[in-house]
Length: 509
Image (cartoon, rainbow, N blue to C red; front, side, top):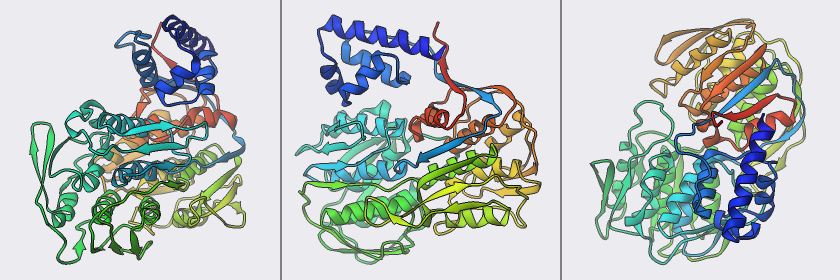
């Protein structure tokens, strides 16, 4: 069914392209992709998201699918045993931060092996609407970003901006570009109230004041403002730290940021800013001393490191399916607490010698899982800022706890309602009890059985349900998986390469 659908779509695209008189290369240029990618799409050999279909239709000036045709779904046949090896892709969260940081540079930035996900696509649409030239250079997902001399902030793509939380990280670089601008309200995952106040508190040191208007943040920047004392962040947030870093990077002076996040995406941003000529002391600690530049105009290349959250996703996939796989290029320094906890629960694995990521800094290794009999941990599982258990990795312990013997409590103290989505595991046979909006109790082991579930609106719980479906007997359907595509590149296809049976389909007829 998937092959027929993709072939039909490919034929439609090929016919529309020929009708316009374009070559595959011309269409590729319009889409900022490669000719070989267009060739694969037209032959029906590559999954195509509804968003990509809309872009292709716009480029060719032809409606390829009817409006309201429906979202993309996944059909999973289980139970599955995974085998083989897989590489961890580069960090989604680093990628989006670096896209925002490229606005600091008047020169050309090339980011290597960028995660080609919907979150990145939305940011590229926003950047393009402001006059920034971006293009994918090759099939390795190298991405070129060249800002214009003057950004057209009045032309910002509101629809794309509202579909990403990352838009909030435009505040730091844009306060140096304009003293009066508007940003649409942030969108993205539905994780409860996530205030922007910590961002505004940090950036107020650089003269930024923001008022909420109808659907937008109206930003006004006071001239000749500069930090007169260290900036103390009111929360050790990743994006808050990144915003403060980007504001400090174009300040011709020294800024001290305290209670800074030392997490993986912040470190990648620091390494990139160093390539721009910014001096940063304290990388990996909670105090950063930043000496910025009045003007940044350099041509640079940077390789973001691998994604520890994707590595944890693959690790959880192996555990829940009782599989032996090798996960290559694991950023171990950002998974050490998670692995220590798993070892306490009885998880066995082998690890290679460490080596460096392409950024020259991050420590990587290859990890081979072993089939293990897991038991519940002694204490509850809860996240902490780095170097504690990563907040985004906590949901994966729900599906892991479900296959362990005993009772496990998860305490998701950061978000108001993310824990609620984990109760969806009950539809697949899990014994999950919601104690309050922040805590769930999970009893294992679980006898999984297939079910049809609408994808939760939060990224990590959505992937957790998909992983449980891999272990479930029979056929499961996960509907409306845009949120997964927002944070993972070709996840279903890559799991299929390990032996999963996941079929992509839509309600198109």
